[in-house]
Amino acid sequence: MVKQIKSHSWDDVNKMISLIEPYIAIDDGGKDGTGCSKFGGMPDLPLAYEWPEYNGKPMIFYGQLNLSEVPDCEIDNILPKTGILYFFSFFKNPESEFGAEYDFLKSKAEYKVLFYDGDLDKISNRQFPIDLIATYQFKEMPITLSMNYKIPTSTETWNVEKIGFSENDMEHFDELTYDGDYFVADTMLGTPSPIQYGVDYDWAYASMDLDLPTVDYEDPEFQTEVDKLRPEYINLLSFTMEQRFEEIGISLCYFGITKDDLNNKNFDNVVFILQDT
Image 1 (cartoon, one colour):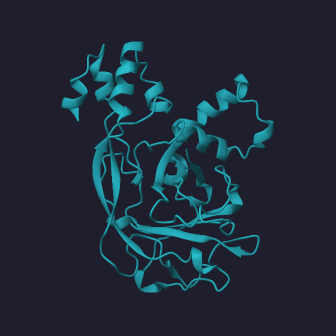
Image 2 (cartoon, rainbow, N blue to C red; image 1 turned 180 degrees about the horizontal axis):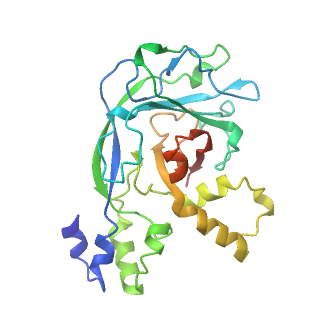
């Protein structure tokens, strides 16, 4: 990666190299068993946990991450070392072969992240709710977690903006990331790869619980508040629905959490957004 970066004529190559960051890569395949990391299937929950609902209707289960399977990632050891995270979200029934209709900024009530950090002997495979349509009862897809390195793929993320690239270096950044070699959809930690503008913008918007039609995005006070929030968010989980949850759609999904909330294991404050072309 450094060799490819240095092949460009930067004004300050060290600024670009400083953007190289570790992240957790999520790949298909892995061990299959109670409590193991996976997309889809049925969650391995303790009896006391209820299947999350929205307006009396069951959410879909995206997957679970066993944090004991996460390798050290050289990012301040910010993740808990043990426990399981469960990811849920509500979607209307599909309206066509292209999936369901949904907002990219979902209301807080429409998604849920659960956390369990107890004895694995006390969790078991929870059956799908009887009123969850068969289309949304997704097959189990085991995954593996490994550490890797990458660079951000958009200039519209706070860590690229703060670098202060020259105009020349901004052009080289665009050239370096244009072909998509550094775009990684399925990740934990690191800077998530956006389809549109930086995901940290949407995480900030989601946390502010905005009435979007009335928002004046050019308002300086609003911009200041958004820019204050953006660096606080950690990429808890990002993934594509393509080839996994296509019955809903093919958007990319991004779950974010602030550093303070992650440190306090306050997963009720996770924000969830989607992006699409």
